[in-house]
Length: 314
Image (cartoon, rainbow, N blue to C red; front, side, top):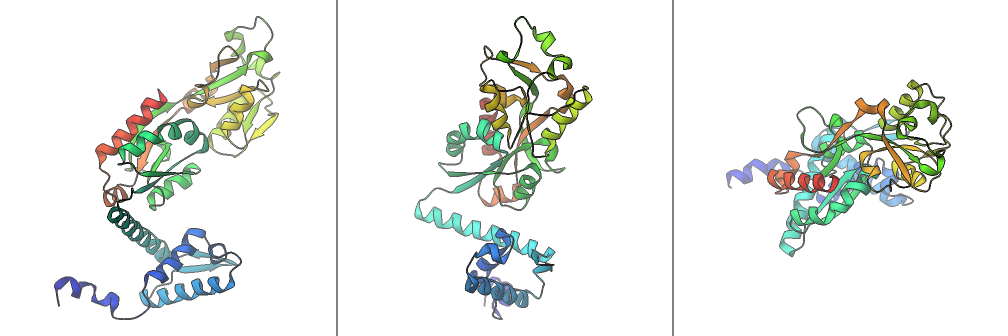
């Protein structure tokens, strides 16, 4: 018996560990509950529940905890899920390599960042990754940071201030904010200087976000700090919707740097939004170095992807 065989012997000295059981556990971990992992299928739900119990017996650890009617992962369950996710990804990459297929990578970001920055760069990113198949996923900032940490997302374009201390990232661009006013809403002869004064803003219809995120909160607080009774006529689910309403001439709005690039300044007056001058944030390409090493993506490739995104933002 070789040293390697002896090292792993205890893993196979008792029953309870199998790929199928680990798959059932991961279905629950990814879905967030057994019911969501197998909706409407009582037999499959029962099977997953049994598989989790068998894994708990094998590892001698509680993998889930019940809080009221909700089943959540324990600390040990979170750790096991991360390990299994890595191993399944390694096996899938190996299968694809042997079949001559390209690898698959998930790129995450906010809805507007994906639309305005990431999607136009996808062909170049795929080329950098050897012709990889690319998937995109929409996340809030905190969730995206955690998804990178847990290996659920390969690459993320995210605000720099969200990246944990010591996290691996490369700056892509600095994001500023601009007040965008359709010229059809302004009286003839209004100058840019006059339009930049809060006194004028109170008379304008506005669109704003409604997700309670950092940008949405900052816009509302900045308007109130400028002395406005800020009551947007339109409350939107994303900056994409705000920009669309501005483009239609329906209202004014505060948009990030990426959102003003395709606005026609003959139709829309674009002014730096002074109340949020200090709110500007850098966007970075963020990754999990352990995951990238396992997937054979080196730092030079990651920096090349960041350059692609940076060139697209210019």
